[in-house]
Image (spheres, rainbow, N blue to C red):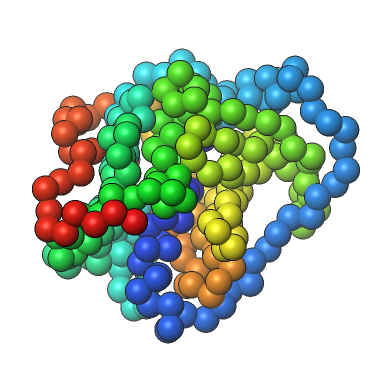
Length: 264
């Protein structure tokens, strides 16, 4: 899937955390569930075949070993820039800063350690749920729901849901050491339209407004609106650029040598 839905969630939450006092609560639309029978393993497999085809096809997705994307979104009068770099099997790096600014927030995962570095250079090792959030980003960033050999990931089929008269097929994605989140697929196209997760007691939902195609023809979310249930600003992020298979050194995903060395 286009995992940048959750990538944008993570960046938005970190940025919004510093401005929560200025934010106003935004309503969150939650699709209503409809009763269905328990899905069999065959049902899950069939859904995953259609899903993989909808995001570009297994052959195309398997050819993408690195990807660098840039999204922008407005926040409190500023334009924020989010650059996300992924590399198989499960490397992840995300850099967020105000356009034209110098300070940035960096989040990374090197396959073992999840970390973040603030604008002042302090590097923090993440544990517990904070690590799980980043692991989920890294796994999704490398399409582990389709390729679990990249990172162990379980997928189950939940009851269909309806929202505004549309029916969605619901996949529950459970990466090892990560957080479970749901992807709502258009019941006709099997494109991922909605992604939702829960971070502690906060619900987060991202809705795709439009799609585009990546360099190899893979499906990309062109515009995504993310809403949190705790009053942080709602943001709509727009894809600016995406590149596949750049040469990317593994070293950039490792925790940098910075001051602090905090663990949370």
